[in-house]
Length: 105
Picture 1 (cartoon, one colour):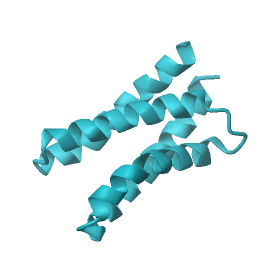
Picture 2 (cartoon, rainbow, N blue to C red; picture 1 turned 45 degrees about the horizontal axis):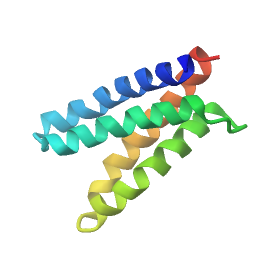
Picture 3 (cartoon, helix red, strand yellow; picture 1 turned 120 degrees about the vertical axis):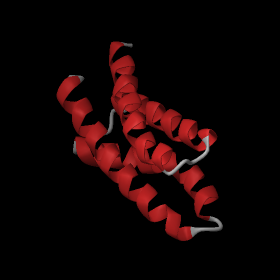
């Protein structure tokens, strides 16, 4: 349980980082809270999933899989908006994977 909680804390930190540009763009709070909660869940999954692969790659894969349902909705009318979302998801997902491997062993 300690591992899961720490993963969720790291996820919350990633969520805050992800929300900063969203708040500056004055996006709606439902979008901000959706992004934040996604990162808490991603942090949990990265910390508790036992995939035998590079931790950075594990973080990227899990974060992109968690983003997928939302990405379909977001990109339905505006595909270009997915570029920054996929970029930040890849960066933060990789960082979470790395942090979890370094601090949660």
